[in-house]
Image (cartoon, rainbow, N blue to C red; front, side, top):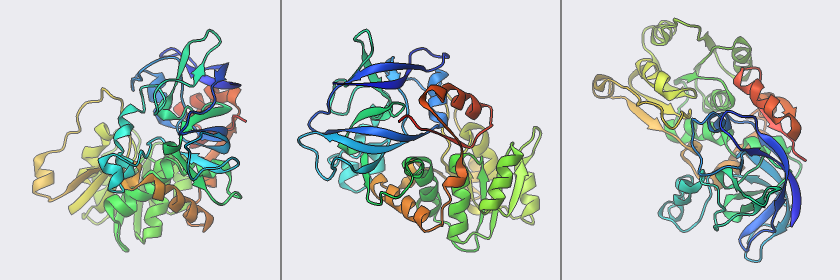
Length: 373
């Protein structure tokens, strides 16, 4: 057994509690990882606010993590002590229908990510009172060390890569790159609208630039984010202040045509409709932004779909396998085609995690990175 410090989600609406917990050795198919970097994602904000229910409390949150393997179980294959790894919030069990088809982003075991127990069952964490502690997304990365199944691990061969970049390559970056290249299949000279320039949206801007889009319109309420979006490839920006008629603004910028593709990287309930009305006939909308579990339906008039012959697509993890997506994103980063460093506004120690989420919720950072150890 190992003692480790971790940030526990104990009560809805309360700050995360940084405590020392007990971590059991990895099971036969598991590995112990010393966590070196974790992205601060809006998903955990939804959990803390009670907008995305989880199966138990206490629970260690954190799903966008990277680190170094310290110990492996007897049945682990292809992962060794000392390996640098990214941990993916969707496992790749390898045996379900989707995994057999190579569509690991649709792994059947993803239905268990909010429950708390390990993929193999049971728990590997206990608090000071001996109570079982769950792990969010089968990872629980807001900790100095964690135990995860090999199904949630991708080995990174290049040990020179920063852990912060690896962490971002496990969630927001592939979600964006795949949304552009796999879900939408953006082609050279096409036009793109990006609604929301957080971690995912900024990478959509870069991926659209790499795909050869000649018009890239970025939309966000924060001017400093729009300034960065311009630097990363946006050709035009729109500040989404109250009262903005987004479709009208987009039509004006495109000579009355609209855009070929719109990417909703913000609240899909509020923004999918305006995005659809901003596209050309035959255009498409890709939704990557998450919403609370009890969010209402997306309302799209049938005339927009049928009369406009448009498409509405949901995309998780970029609509491609995480086993291919993580290496692909890191290859783009290494080649200078995807600037992940520019997205990291600030790093935080484990004791600063609540400040990090305050900064995120108030729009002061783009991507904070937790450095637990």
